[in-house]
Every structure is written in C-alpha cells, then in structure tokens.
Length: 395
Image 1: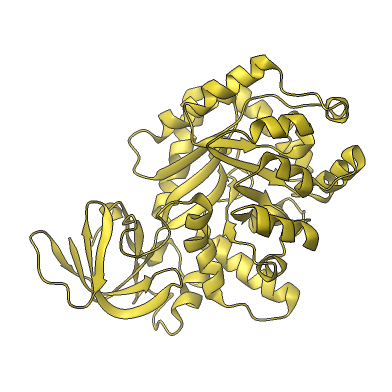
Image 2: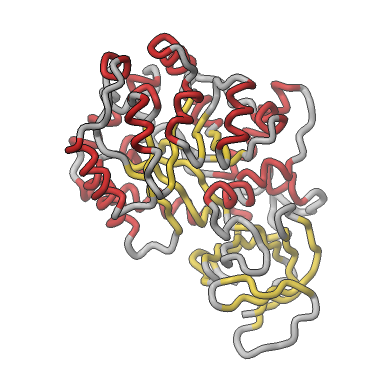
C-alpha cells in the first residue's frame, strides 16, 4: 500500500513533513519519501491527512473498567490498595464475563482515540492474565500484559528480609509463561530478597514507585531507604508514577532504567499531586505517559497530553515544547518497551493515526505538535492503523 501526498510526523524527532509518500509492506513502513515508484497494490491519495505515530498508553489497569468512579471521596489506599482496596474487592466478587465485557469496551475506547498499544499491570495472578487474554481475543490492539501473583509481604516480613516462598515462586514461573513480564505493586509490599529474586526474571520488569507521599514516607520509616531506591533492587525496565521522587531518585532512575511512566490525571484525581516532568527531563529521564486505572480515569491520551502540558507550564511558569509531550506517548514509549513502535520510520511497525488536517478543532493547522497535544481529540481522527491494517475508521 502507498499513501500518497500525506503529511507525516517523521522519525525520532517527530519532524513535520508537509507532503510525502509512504510505502507499507509486510506490516511495516518500508519507504518514506516523495519519489516512491508505483508498485502493485493499493494507492491512496491522503492529501488532507496527517499521519502521526500510533499512541502508546504505557500504564493501565483495564481490569477495573467495571468500577468507574466508585468511591470518589475515598483516599488512595481505600480505593486501590493491592491488599484491602475496594478495587480488589470488586475484582474478586465480579463475574468474569462482566469483567471481560467492560474490558472490551475500554479497548474499543482506546482504539477510537488513537491508542495502538497499551501496557497493563494485571492483577489476579495467572487467572487474571488469562482473563485479560480472553478479553483481548479478536481485538487488533497491541497489548503488553505485565502480571503479578497475589503475594504481598507485611511490614514485619520486610524488616526480617523474608524471601518469596517456593510455592509462590512456582506460581511466578507459570505466570511468566503466559504474559510479557511482571508489574509489581510496589516495594512497600516486597522485602529486599523478594525484589532481588524478581530481578532475575528475563522478561519485562516494572514497578509502581513514589506514587503518594504516604507510600514514600512508609518506605523510609520501614527500611530507612527511599521507595525508588528500594525499587532498584528489582532492576526494573521502568518505574511508574515517581510523583514524589527527589532529584537524586530521578538521577538514579535516569541512569538505571529505560524510563519513567507518569500518570498525571490519575494522580490529580486522587489528590496526590502532579509528577514533575520538568525535573525528569532535566535529569535526562526518558518519560512516557499512562492513564492508569480506568476506575479513576478515562483511557484517553489526547486528554492526558493536554492536561500534562498545560498544568506543567502553569506550575513551573515556563514554556514547554509540545513536541516533548507528544514524544511521551509515541517515541519515548517505544524506547521504554524496546520495540519498533511509536515512530514513523523505515523498518518500524506500521502503527499510526490518520488525523484530519481540516478537522473542526484543528483547521488551520499552524503548529502541528501543539495542535495534536491540546486540540486533537477523537473527532480529529479519520482512521487508526495497526500493522498496516485499518482497524478503525477508513481512508
């Protein structure tokens, strides 16, 4: 397939090319230039369209899609604590078919809003992972499922450095045969030996860290170490949240991980502050964006980018290049996951979103990156493509 006369945000720097041609074969971008010779197959004139990388939602919990806006007035622990939160109660007591039904609705919502890949921290052990796989069957979206076993250590076990019992280690081994890696609730539920055991996992390793002031203080009170510092025992590929991380924590994350995934609207809805992406960028952290629990936040990356861009400028009283925010949902996320996604470039998977340049909220398109970050929405999308196939809309 050749896309003719299309505008493109190209490469790692999302360079705006006003008019070019794009050749897609074998699910990938093969050639991107204005002099592509005609080949057998479909040729589509895309003169009024802008091609941007498929958006990557780097942190979700879609299992709680059935529990939207429950207990809004409760504190974070009451809502989402992995041991006693109301979310866990709902997940355990709801029929699997209902959980699947609402997870599928969330996936459909993400696709319509330009998300082509999402990364989910899946609770419920092996059963939870298998339920997620069932929910995703026959859906085109790319998913990265990070499972976990339902084993959480007490404050006393952490102080005594109790390792993971063999019975639970066996559960982890089985779990990892069915998912893409492990998504840990946090270092406050795991001893040092446990985190070191989990660091030997050969698949993706990720962990929540410094999401709330309470969790940050709890780590220091229990172990004398900061939550991010203890999280490093996992040797994580990436950390999630880091809302209360210090500059030394961020410096450590920059050197020892592939990046940080921030969830600004979720943090704000929990009244837990806003992640300091300015400090993260100053420390050369690779920052990506997630929408977190569907229970407390909609899985809409356009709204996430708009919110993060404006609130960060409002807090720090300085301008931020909108391109840097757009990279957080595309290029940066692809780097964190070490996959050829999030970028329109030769050899990368052909995941992209076709934006209507003459859309009501975008026309005239004066600053492409800014308009995508704070003006684009579901109505701006003409079509969504994954692996070269149109999975939503039409062109």
